[in-house]
Structures are given as structure tokens and as C-alpha cells.
Amino acid sequence: VIANILFSNILSLNGNFSKRPPQRLHNRKPDNSATEQGYIKTKQNHNQSIEAFINTVASKQATIVIALSGEMANNLMHIAHGIGLRELAKELYNIDCNLVLRHHEGRNNLQPKPKWKLARNNIQECFPKLAVWNFSEGNTPHFEEQTKAQVDWIGKDRYDYLMAHINSYNNTEIEKGLDFLARTFFTDPKSPKQDNSKGPIKLPYMLSNTLFAMPLIDKYYTQIRDMMAFDDSKCCSRLPKPNEYVFHFRNYESELIRKRSRAYDKGYAELSPQKTATELFSCLNTGGNDSKVAITTRFGNQKARDQMEALLQAGIESYLVENQTAVEDFCFLKGANIELVGTAQSTFVFWAALLGNATKCRLYLVDNWGLRKRFPFFHDLFYYNWTHPLLKERIKYELYKSEEMENSI
Image (cartoon, rainbow, N blue to C red; front, side, top):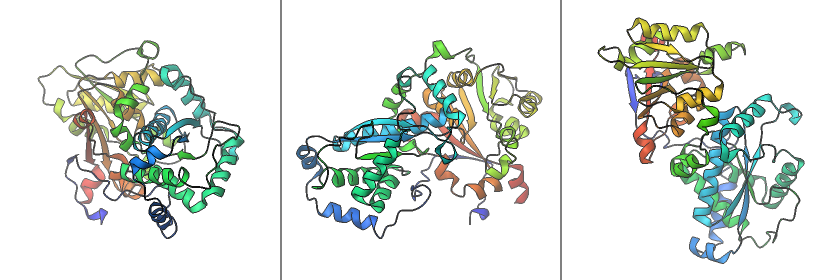
């Protein structure tokens, strides 16, 4: 069906594509036959209202283990989900949650990947309020011990049900998971009075392991932005000029070639230089303005120069921002004034949009068969219908047809 959809040349996507959110359970759906009925039965056995529950249970404490992955921006996404989950648990059920970070580990849990160390260093250097966090606090045998204890306590199906819902794609499902947590753990007569185990992870715990943090970011944007204040004085080298559009060319193809896989096959193709000049920045090729396009990129190679040269040939003044570190590039993106433009698949540009103050942030995707094959429901994964006034006003999603799609119609 998707293959027969005809996309317009540029679609400004403002709708909510998450009406049927994918279930989150380590990429599989929960067993409704056991877990859903268990949830209903649990609620039926507790006739207290939420207000009565809050007043009845004096002490309600839990742990949120934030499973980190990838580099700095991915880590920020994981941390934001954990912060949002903590805020929601407190708001709905007056549960106080302790946050514990657990960095990604290598194969067989023997050697950690170097990425997490670079991410930790960048975050501790440039995000003062996160600098004191221990990125290895959850990387101890205590985590496995507590996981076994919680599974033994409530059963594997109910454990999976809880984790699936708190990592879901919308707040309704997340709230359902928190309701299950509250009523199962804090009103269960078999619940231990106090977790006296040694270690930072106290039962009950939730494992926050999703990169799709947009629902909770939307709800708690003010709190999350405050926690993620960026130290410009320490981590910035230069800033865009007021008349500059800032474009982040992620250059996935250069990165994935080194891994012997094409960006197209992985669903990460970006706009061709010609389309960047004639469509993405079509507002600038009409002449009569002094605006420039400043281009940041992860790989300042010929592919990046091709993007710049196409803009120049279209009469759009542009240049590459070079000789900067990753965090300096991030600061430059965050400092955009008029517009920040980049692929919606980049968490790097996404966080620059969230933490910056650009008048408009345009996040785009390129429609092609590689994207459709790898991410059939790409709308659900990469677009979000913001409700927070500032995010709704500033962040816009766009879809462009590739040359391949134009020629196939």
C-alpha cells in the first residue's frame, strides 16, 4: 500500500502519525493474553481511586534505570525520557524515582564500546547539571540481581508488560504502565516493606531504553531544557551570524561506507546537492537577499563540498564550518537565528533545535525505496505532532521526493 502512495513535491507534515503506535518491548509485542488480563485483574482488585491510593501509601519510591546507547545526542534522548518518566510518576502517583545511568556495553558485556566514553566526556564537559551523574552506576552485577528479583516477584509476563508500556510511543500507554507499576508494587500485600539490597537500584525499577522520547519531551519540555542547559562559555568556538541559515549535512553516506553498507540501504539517504539547492533552500534562490547558508557536517569531504557548491551555483552564498569539535558544531547549530535545517533522522540536529532559539527548525526526510523498506512507518519514528506552544511553533517537518521516486511515477 505504501508503495502506491503519491507524495507531493514537498509535504509540510503537521498531523499526528502515532494513532497506532508501535508496541515497545525490545521490538516485540507484549503477550496480551496474559499481561493485559493481568493488568485488568489488578485494577479490578483495587477499588481505590487514584487520590485514595496516593493518600493511602505513605512512601512510594522507585528506580529508573536509563539504558544509554550511541553518542552524545542519543544519550541526551535516553536521559530526557528518564527525566520525563520521573516527572510523570511524581505527578500522577507521587512516586519518587531515583535515576541510575547504565551505559552501553560491548558484546558479551565484556568491553564497553568507546562511543559511550566520548558521549560521557562531552556531556560532562558541556552540560553542567548532568556533569555529576555517574554513567556507570548501573553497570554492576547489582542490575542483574535486581532484575531477577523483580521478575521472581511479579513474573516475566508482567515484567515485560511494564517495560513495554513505559517505553511506549505515546503518553497514554506510558501512563498505563505507571498505573500498573503503582497498583502492582505499592498495594501488593506480598511486596517487601523495604528493599535492603546494597546498590543504587531499589525495587521496583523501570528500565528506560527508548530513543523515542518525544511524548515526554513535549509534556515536560521546560524541565528537560532546564536540566540540559548548555555551557556556551566552555563549549562554543563561534556562532552563526544573524543573516545565516544553518544547515547540518549529516553525511550518513560517508559514515556508513566505512561500515560496508550504503546509507540508502539503511534508510538514511540525504538530499542530493541539486535538491538541497533548488528545493530545501528554494526560499533563498529568488535573489535580492543577503542571507547565507552555513554548513556543518560530520565529514568535511567532497560530498560536503558538493552540497556547498550546488548552493553557490544556484546563487546562494554558502560556506563550510570547519576545524571544530563535535560539541563546537553542536553549539553552532544551537546558535542558529533564522533557521536551523537538517535531517529528521539526526538526534544531533534534533537536540540543537530543542535547546536553541532559532525562529524555525526544519527537519526533513527524503522519500525513497530504501527509507520505505527499512522504516515502513517512518512517520511514527521520525515525526511528532508537538503540543507545547514553543515546539509546535518552531519545529516543522518536511518530506521531499528523491530523484528515484520522481522517476518511478
